Image 1: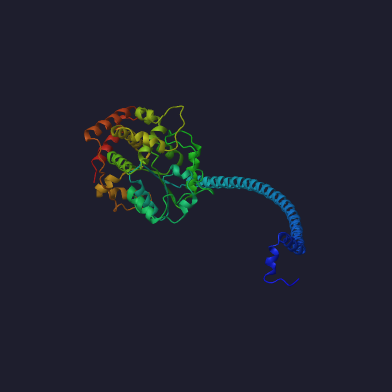
Image 2: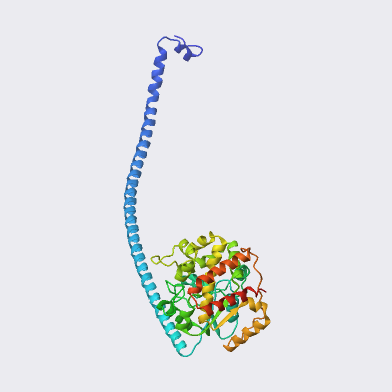
Length: 445
């Protein structure tokens, strides 16, 4: 048999049973190689599986370790919180003890100053008391004393802000712009010190011994140990002759003179101009002065009797606690008709003037100071006589522009006040008060 010619592989494929046989032979020849490849792949997978199992075991160990670490961390956090709570409680207790200790030190200092004040008064110290109602020119007069050597002037010792004023407010350098704004708004002289600069303050703020509850009217023979001790503290703390400038003491003049002696000067101003100044400030958003009229009514049974309508409006009564702030009362009086509000103010003005005629050493009018050079010389001579070299040559007063009721209406309201006061004062005393009022009304510069 001869050798096949052409493509023998093709010829074999054309044989009926040779194709499958060739495929089988080819597969059989390749099977060992495929088996070896699979075995190698299985080995690789087995190795990877082992590595993965090892990694999982390691991760399991790390997870367990992490869980243990987390539990330790939680325990440490709990311990720290417990220690922090304990420390906070200790700090709070220390703060309480510290405040208690500081409070005791403040009380001790106040008692020492009160004793010093009593000693000064017994030794002949004569404090100067400047009594007035708001917008009378009292700050002008007080700042005169502040500029003199040898005097120690206290601005409004009964001001409610003194109960909680911070040390930084009186000891820091005053803001010149703020002081200038106040001077312009209130028509006060310029100053480079805080208004309350001279006060002795407690370690945590507030003026030493400031009475927590104060009354703005006291009969001459009444007892008020808190107020007396407070004023004695201020006398003891003064680094010079004490000068008290009050705007809430109109109905306390007799009580203060009897308890503390000293020199008492009352500043009286034209009541219509004074009330117009109240209204002017209220138009600027400052209801303090009208509110203080309502507060004085709330503190004074005599004013309540003179003005029962306002007494009812502010909720006065024998069983009612005395209000300590003017803010809630400002709205009450602001809503009253202007004639009614003026009559309430005039009642306070007239009663304070009668108290001054009974208990003050000198009645000073800034209206007359500005209008009369002769009166100015007379006033300066009086102050020189009590050891105060004061000069009023710079006094300037402007007219208020706020619209008041007609003059005839004002006269009618003033007459009603004086008629009600006929039971309060003797005839000659009442007549003298009315004459002074007429002189003040006629003394406009």
